[in-house]
Length: 178
Image (cartoon, rainbow, N blue to C red):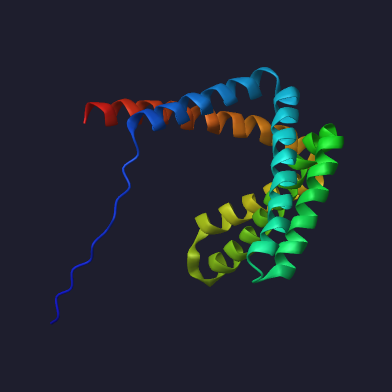
């Protein structure tokens, strides 16, 4: 048998970076809970600015590196277009972004449920079947009511950010002790 040794590079993240990430997530969560509309509008505006700048950079990179120039051009045009639309109409973006996410998640839940039903009927058991049916129902609800579902997703994201932020803060202090 041939013995091989693999070297694995582990990137060590400073404890204070994890702490800052946790504090940022907690602040974002609190802002989303306190003023979801305004906070979402700001997030969407920042996203629109990012798309605009990224689109411009994609087009500029064509002159430096001509490989895949068609994709860079399409990406750049789409980024600039999306950025301008979102920056000119941030309320549209604030309403459409969560609604679009709800539709995508709903379709994913329905497909996952269908595959889960196939698994359940092939011997996966009653539990797999129940979860599959619940997944399909959740998906239908998300797709049928994307605006309401999108509003709920904002609060779900806020809750996840709060829990994740608190966990990051705890982990950061454990890293500091170690």
